Length: 374
Image 1 (cartoon, one colour):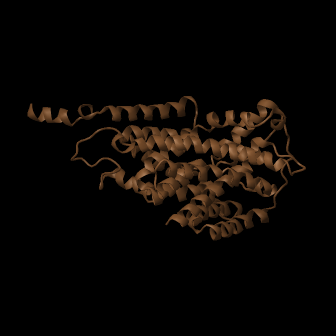
Image 2: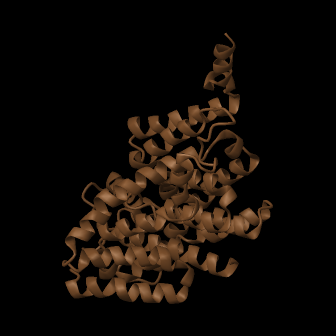
Image 3: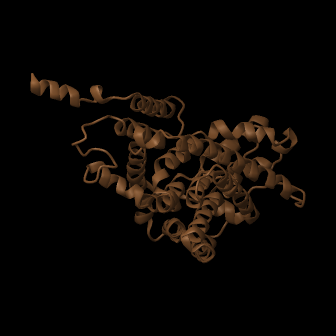
């Protein structure tokens, strides 16, 4: 009976707390959103299940969690805490990204840059709420809607906030179809949403091969802190566009990125143990993240409208909303909202230009912040 009593006292049922139960419910909500609403299932299913795993109480003498040195999850989480997984994801992103639309209409790159205003305004907002400079920089990058970049910068500048920042970044990436359309309709007129853009020109193979090399040199010389992320992305793109390393490119954009996404999502979820995650700072980070995402979306839209004051060939301002780094969901949302006004207006290819530019922009912004604050 004594052994049986000790066993009962060590079960998860006996040690379960209200915060743990609340986090398990949040994990189930994430999984439900992924399955029922199809909100970024490749991210929310691993994260949601990781949240459940990370909040099962265990004995103090057992090493099970991501924060217990020596546990299996601790070593898996090492790839998150040391910023190893994000560059590998960027390698896969580069191997699956076509920069042709951006090269065919370079002025759309400015929309991706304009959307980064969300990063720097959120940085100032975090400072105003009492976070220190490094923490504010890590929180601000949520505005880029780029989960791997947010994790990478947080691992370097604010590892104590890594869990909250990662969950916030990926949550808002998943909620792109919910957050962006109201802002897009609010800041544009029907006439603007009906604007049709000329089809992009065909980009030569030589241009596509030269671009990743030249773009890497320019970006890394501007922001050396972005070398790891930008370097891996453009390396992946060179594997794709060179057409002589198709096996490597195919591995990077399929098996490798899938494996890393599974590990990254699961470990990020498992890091949200209630005693580490449910703090006032986490709520502030979620609030700032939502604000930064809205500001980034609005920044791209308004800058597109500003550009139209000086352009003969007008840009559909909806395309500016794709300046955030949520690839390709933001571009799909632009297509969806545009076709609600005109079913024959195809904006997806145009929207991909600021969308991929936003990925580059958020990585460069992270590099600038890391370089300045290190």
